[in-house]
Length: 264
Image (tube, rainbow, N blue to C red):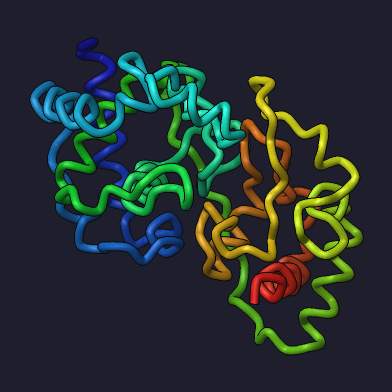
């Protein structure tokens, strides 16, 4: 293991522990104590993370983290999402700006909760084991992606009451942002662009059916939907709307209410 790389991971770990009361933690109230009780990053914990990875993750993500494990073939045939190739450094589920690395908290959320319908959650692992596998996964990432601390996109304001006026305004925003082109006029994933959607690797990419709660793979709380809208889903068809909606954060919350109303 490159000692300079371990040093960076150690510094990153220390910095994130200091920030555990900041915005990244505030976005995910999951096992809060686990953030403040992380094992150190060193050769031993990374090696232990590899052992856990080889038992629990290699079947989909492959021995070298390239998303080419033996199960990946069957996921592709079923039009499921291709297992993440960590060496590309492209992550859908982040709290950071498009193109940036996810935070350790983002990775912890994904490992803990999984991806509904595709990746199981690994909350059966002790928190320390989850952190160790995250440390190992980060060794697959491109070095230039780890050269700076990723900036978390701010969630501005608080969820609004999901009343009729808010949902109606959210529908207007849904139309303005052309969400219907992929998700369809009723949010059923049947928009005119949906049949031709592909991810960055050329695999078919079904548009999310927003009427199904299982489609909210980045979380189904209002804050999770807001985060998905402003960060986008790197590697997929959904871009970040953070710049387009700057100064219109209240409209984002209205859109959140409309999207959630579709699944109720």
